[in-house]
Image 1 (cartoon, rainbow over the protein chains, first blue to last red):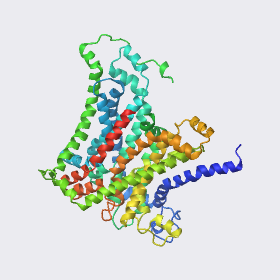
Image 2: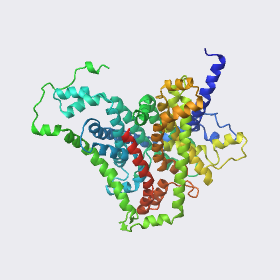
Image 3: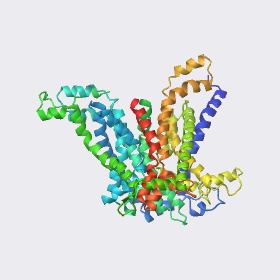
Image 4: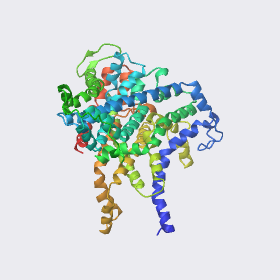
Amino acid sequence: MVTGHGRFDHAVRVWLPVGFFLVVALFPFYWMAITSIKPNSELYNKNVMPLIVHAPTLKHYIDLLTKSSFLTWTWNTMLVSVVATAISLILGTMLAYPLARMRFAGASLIAMTIAAIYLVPQPLLFIPLADVINRLDLGNTLTSVILTYPTMLVPFCAWLLLGYFKTVPKELEEAARIDGASRVQTMWMIFLPLCTPGFISAGIFAFTLSQNEFLYALIFLTKTSVRTVPVGVISELIRGDVFYWGQLMAGALLGSIPVALIYSFFVEHYVAGLTAGSVKG
Amino acid sequence: MTIASERLPVPAHGARRRAPLAAFLDRESVFSWLMMAVPLAFLAALVGYPFFYGILLSLQDRPVAHAGTFVGLKNFVTNLHDAVFWQVTVNTFIYTGVATLLKMVGGLGLALAMNQHFRMKNLVRALLLLPFIVPTVLSTVAWLWMLDPAFSVVNRLLVVLGWPKPGPSWLGNPTLAMVSIIMINTWRGLPFYGITLLAGLQTVPSELYDAAAIDGAGGWHRFRFITLPLLRPIILIVTLFSVIFTFADFQLVYVLTHGGPQNATQLFATYAFDIAMGAGQLGLGASVALAMLPALALLIVALTIYLRRE
């Protein structure tokens, strides 16, 4: 039934708007990529057609990796993200499991408190936290961010996992209980292995948020050796009047790759997590 | 599902009669509170305590690295007489309001465009979410370069399209700087709206549309009387989320304009940062940050209640 006219009509209805959104969404990344491989003679010449690369070079990448501390920042960011994510998944589970499975007085109050904490944005807390970190003598240590990132990630993971836990059928746990398993055994051996997809979702989000975090890292980490990628790029690659855009874009691109990679492997989990709160209800 | 056929790794010695301590620990309330104790203590120490400590700080004259002195509401009075503070307030509301509206309308458009049958849909959806998942600071640096006063690619495209040289000064003109941060915030947040609303659209039963079509309802009427009412709960949640985090935005402005020119893009978060970290006035800075609290508290309470009701 698809006539030539219908197919054309379909293409216009679908690809005109979708194409527009795609171009707007992706152009900055395209621009990042081609800037990072353009020689300076092209970057700062207004007479060269800017949308394509005429003489690609890896100079900016080599400079970035050899002349700046980018690799150190990447290592720091990875370490902090992995540890903060692990802590948050564990503490989040310790909150979500009782809330999803047990009946006890105060459960709904706790659940509401966690939801509220999840919604408290960092700018409300960063000044007192900076003072707390100073008094604990944790300034310029990765511990400072490993401790503070979970303040936003724990409520987040707890909330996401709580939603997931409630969708898991109870029968297996009840059977285990009848067979005499303790609550901890039931949770550890029966329940948690069933929740792997939930952990993947929460883990990806927590990891992505850790990679994205800027404010705490900016305040707590002021030495090159402990900086994370976003803070290092902003504080050390932007250097006043020197031409640095090639390196900066190379850094922005490389810094985005871990998140983009993980995301591309788990995109379905990501979308599921994104919409879980609002759709599943 | 193969789970049911697997043998359950449960100890066979059914300990039906438990020791008193074990029985006590087995009670739902005891087990729950014991398990929650560690995470709750953690949150109390690093969210609860700083929150109240922040309120205390806002009542002090507290230069960094010095002891504070209690000054009552003096910091808040200072803010009320500070012209920049009022500009910050107006800026924050404009930024939040306009960006949220653009994200809502654009996100709905994106969701409707994506809610059609076409090839490579999953790939397109994955690509469209990129602005939302890439670290904000890093994508904002790309925008900084795209809006560079001398080499802006946006301006070079505008000039090709007939705009008089050298094109608008995006980050140098107060109004355009506000336009810029709003556009970039929209660029970053719109996919979140779009993909979430798309998931909502996909739950609308197609029978409803069929029935409406039989009754002779046109495209607009189907959208207005079927799609929109069914999407309303999702739109509400997404919007509340987005308003909270746009209202307290920091990174984008810090990277792009540092609040300038002439505080034209200064928001509560960046202004509080400047006062506390730049000028070292922790007390005054805390009072600026706390100025966000009334609006945020309203939003958070509304959203929390709504999430609980679901």
